[in-house]
Length: 220
Ligand code: CDP
Image 1 (tube, protein in one colour):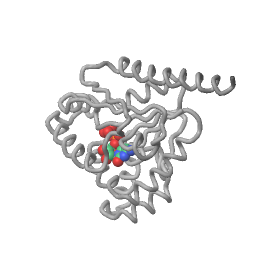
Image 2 (cartoon, helix red, strand yellow):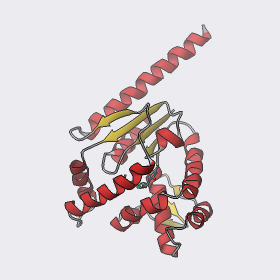
Image 3 (tube, helix red, strand yellow):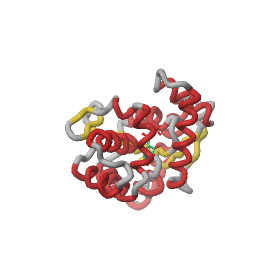
Image 4 (tube, protein in one colour):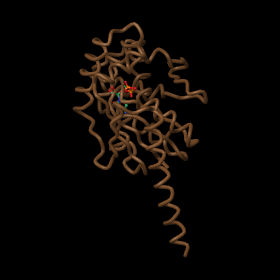
């Protein structure tokens, strides 16, 4: 089964998706980390972020991997912490905008998502990467609340600066990515992580029950 979790920055995707995967015993795939890692590598190697073809070649040559502990690796380097820096936050959409880059990334995401049960988080999972996902969720939250959450993850950066960054990134991402029409939208502004996870877990349970019913129905 594929559970697709999409939504803007700070809506709680990562925390919820990780926790859900843990509870269900599913694998977890963070597609944002893949775009982040590529952005880091391109900056490191001086590949111009405006050149989609060159970035796609780099993405193909240096695929992002995740180890068992959830660390993010690219070109032999552990970039788990570095890719969460503000300089990367700001540049990822510039890299992720190129269709050449997205093609390479989506192909790899489908490959990684193919084996068994998985929770995949991103922006375009329910629409493009896994349009057949059995469960699709789109997480939302007020921008102020999202900036507050982000400031807990980015100590040292003011909430105002983070709110501006979110606004710029929201605009750039929204030009290309919309919620799937059949995704369940959950506003997390006033919800606790565990409540959101409970709701999605309930959706998974309902789908499973339905699938079991269909399977036993076809045997009869
Ligand atoms: O947690 P947050 O939303 O800040 O970041 P993320 O999920 O790691 O995504 C970082 C950026 O990568 C987003 O702002 C998008 O520009 C891009 N992205 C994308 O284009 N498609 C995805 N499936 C995931 C991320």
